[in-house]
Image (cartoon, rainbow, N blue to C red):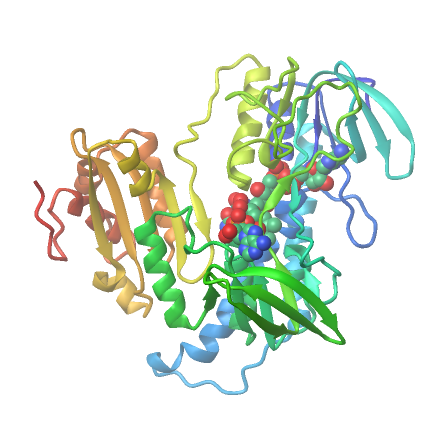
Length: 479
Ligand code: FAD
Ligand code: NAD
């Protein structure tokens, strides 16, 4: 540990650890302070993403999908299997192993890049001093030329359903259930509700999602949200829209939930577990000393400009603790941008092109603007769609629910957005993100040679459909 660093990063989630590594690669002396501890009390890097977010949730999504497919999806291929069972402790052990491998990987990356990883709590003091209190309770004041705040976010709690960690859990608890609940309630049919609801639903829970909004996935393109809702309904997912929870009661091993529906009538349900996932909030508790002078907005997020600089020069903030979508890759890109700018390079982020994915089956993915946003902006546009039901590869895989929707400017043909529900939507949408980053038109995508038979051909056909040239479907007339 030095007395003074070029850069001190507080928080080693995907925003902080990436910023620290890039700053070190650029030749700066860097410390990254992290307060997270494993259940055994050991300091660990990686933040929400690696410990209780992206990675463990995807590990469980993959395990549960394999179980579900083996149980329900093999007969159509002529395969019979019996005695299929799920071993929850083994599934959880696999998840924990992946998490440790990746969090340990960050420690290695810090070592090889010369980042001082410090386990303990960081607090920004007046000026560019940072108070570091180690897990052992030793405090030191470290000086820095630049400070990057990357403290992340926490689940939002609601008074009507207080998390007790046993019957009512948040997303972290929902990643660690020790058995499959027979009846699982989920408050909030957003990203976490759909992903974790899918995990336990595939393993056998009867899942009911209680969603306050009247519309399903209102942040998505409405055509894709409707298609997604249709597919999930077909799968048997029970999403109750307009459902406002007004009370919960713990009785022995059950949670009794009362809620009102859109018509204000009152209902009740009994669950064995209840997951509360109604959004996340920026986390700044203990991060800023009185007088540090950093401005927060009404949501508690640190206010930054487009370059992630706070109101105090040379103090930056990145990731979930600032405005914008709470996504790991958005935070990482902000971390890189800040490190580059500190090093005197020009760097910026195109916030218009940040992919967003829900890892259900099928996946739901989007990049760029929705049709509603383009319409509202009064921009002339055309839409091209292509169904997976017309994709040879999707049919061969018996995975043909969903569609690709591409939106382009009607005058310039420049791609404005792409929205997909379907197999491998996450990877497909990335192809369009790259095209958009290069300012591509739908014609450019249409003129690109796509391998056959691939799921990517659906993107190709949707691009062709924008101008009425799709080959494997009936085109709409283009004016
Ligand atoms: P965090 O990852 O929250 O890291 C912040 C770190 O700062 C933490 O380790 C915290 O301990 C530390 N810290 C805070 N204050 C201090 C302090 N004073 N001193 C020292 N350390 C401090 N996003 C995706 O893009 N894709 C996904 O598939 C995805 N899945 C998710 C699934 C779940 C269940 C959840 C909960 C989230 C998921 N997310 C996903 C969101 C993603 O995890 C976050 O957007 C991302 O982790 C934010 O990164 P961050 O570095 O800003 O913050
Ligand atoms: P979310 O914002 O995606 O969904 C929360 C849902 O809860 C919304 O639909 C909201 O209308 C509903 N809601 C809010 N209050 C309610 C109430 N009192 N009763 C019933 N419903 C209520 O939030 P989340 O699912 O908690 O996820 C938090 C964030 O984590 C996401 O916004 C996302 O940024 C990130 N995340 C991303 C991924 C991914 O990229 N695949 C996965 C998980 C989480």
